[in-house]
Length: 131
Image (cartoon, rainbow, N blue to C red):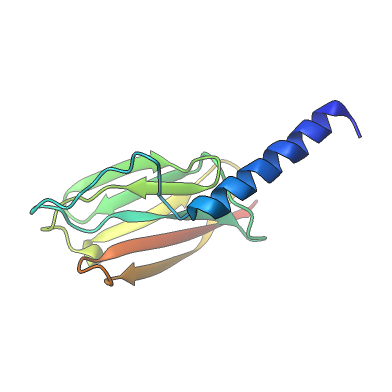
């Protein structure tokens, strides 16, 4: 085994151990923005994956807000993205998420809404297919 390959395996193992210890979830971060204010609406987050289930880094994630415009972000190295609240006046049904990346086409979008904490959070997983 080459030294570079050994380092890559050790770094991957470390990332997996740290990730399982902290409970990786879409859009989570150590300095996560707290949006408990009176004007906060749902947060939008999720993953971009390919048809094999592998995450897709640096995909363009666009949130089209009906009648108001589009907000764009990119997926991180783990394929995760997060868009903070657009405000409580924006209804989740008025937000459409699309994901794109050169060499891929969007195959499907799966949307989940969780209202367990008293406000709806919307998780949207995009699946991209290599062209």
